[in-house]
Length: 317
Image (tube, rainbow, N blue to C red):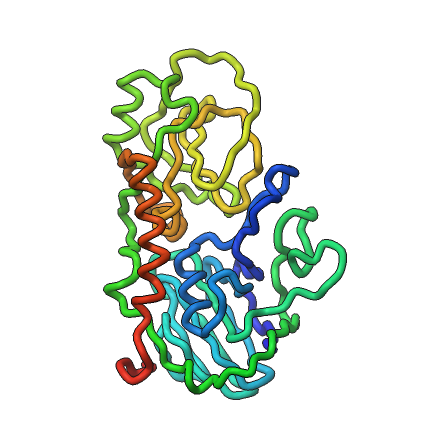
C-alpha cells in the first residue's frame, strides 16, 4: 500500500492499454513510455501489463504503508528513499513507512513506479481506472490518496536488486530520429512536401500533452484542400492540420480524426518521442517498412526481459 504525499504535475495509475475498446470510441490510453513501464513491472516480478504509477514532468513523493518491492524507471529522474540516493531501473526492497521521492533532474518527461504484485483498481462500474476523467482516461492522483497493491506469496528479497543496465535501455535524448510508416493520406502530399517531412527536423512545442505532441518546423501542404471524412486513428499517427504543422497523436488520442495523416511513428520508437523534452527537443523522421516495424517491436519486447541482470551484479546506488 502506498500513500501519495506529493503528486507530480501529471500523476496517474496506468495499466497497459487493453485491446478492444477503440471500436466503441474509447481512447486506448495506457503509459506514454511503454518500454519504461514494462521494465518497471518486470524488475519487480510483475506481468509487463500490471498497473503502475506514471509520474510526469516533475518530481513526486509517496510513503510506503507496508514492506514492499518497488522499482522506478524513466529518463531524467533520480530516486531517493528516506533521503538516500538509490538507482533507477532497479528493484529495491523497501520497509514500511519509507519516504520514496523522485526528483526531476534532466531531459525526459515520464517516470514509472511499480510495486511487486501490481497496484489495485477498486472494483465497480467504470473500474478500468480508479476514478475517470470524462469516463475515458485516468483521473490524476492527489495528495493523501492511498493505493493498494496485490499481495503475493513470492519472496521479495529474492527479487531485490534486479537491474536494467544503461547500455541495454533506449538511447533517450534531446535530438532523436524516429521511424515512421506511410499514413493513409501519404500520397496526398507531393514529392517536395514528402522530402521536406523527411529532411528537416521538427521541434516539440510546449503545447503538447498526452493527447498529442505538436511539432514546429517547415509547414506541410496537401495536393488539395478538400474535406476528409473522419476515420480511425491511434497513437503514433501524424496528422497535418490546415496550418501545416504536424501533430503526433499520443496515448490519450481520440479514436477518430479528420485531418490527413502523412505517416505514423512505429511502436518501438514511440517511447523515444514520448520522452522528448517539450520546447527544446527535436525530432527527425525516417521511413521504415511494416516488416521492419514488426521486427523492431518484437525484438524490443523480447530483449527487455533478458537484459535484466541478477541481484549480485549491481549495487543499489
